[in-house]
Image: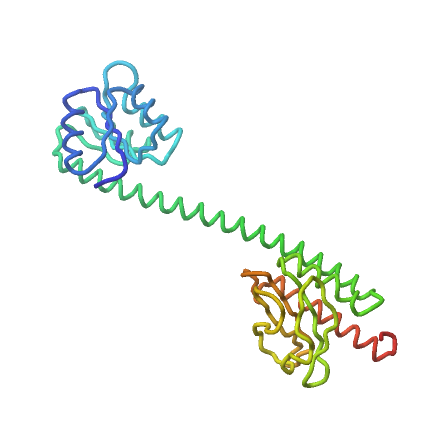
Length: 293
């Protein structure tokens, strides 16, 4: 079966009936019109991929006028023109006006079917190309919007970093960034652990309500991201190391009440982790200078 409806335009009732009945037996859906005016009214409500029209219709406007009007409004429908007064000049004129193909009366029914099949295949290909272009444009717009969101997020994180570097205590230094992570990923709680020696942790800051495991219950600092065990919650928990090269300098613990779409590969999360590492290093330098406790 051919799902697309075809519009057949001819002022001769016998021609309309014979062609529409024959095409219906071939599996086509066929709608008919007996004049330019009737065809134009049908085109206003139905997007026909292919139109078959007689060029010469007595009185009013002709099939050539219909062809010109269709192409002037919507170039997508493919028009096959039929006439009993075919000349080379008329054929060339119809093709120049945008006709897909040209049939001269009398023609064999098989010729019309062959032309229709080619036209419908062409129309489907054009539709797929149009759909692809529309999809591609939507993807580009989405990507541009994503880049703008990332830029806004980066600017906000940089502002939080400046705020953190001017904080009076370790908790207040990490809090703005942790609160941002909590809000952005809708986490129940977020905690920061700093590497303490080669085989232990210390919890430096936390935001949100969740009971995280004490540092003594965590495994030695590792470069492996793993599921956070030992916190009092029914959802997901993530323990994400912060590294500089091969050295683990800290970790972010993320607790969620239920299932979450959070992913450590998220560029924004990676950017925030970089900001936390910068704060860790800044505080270490201050301690080395005897400024921070």
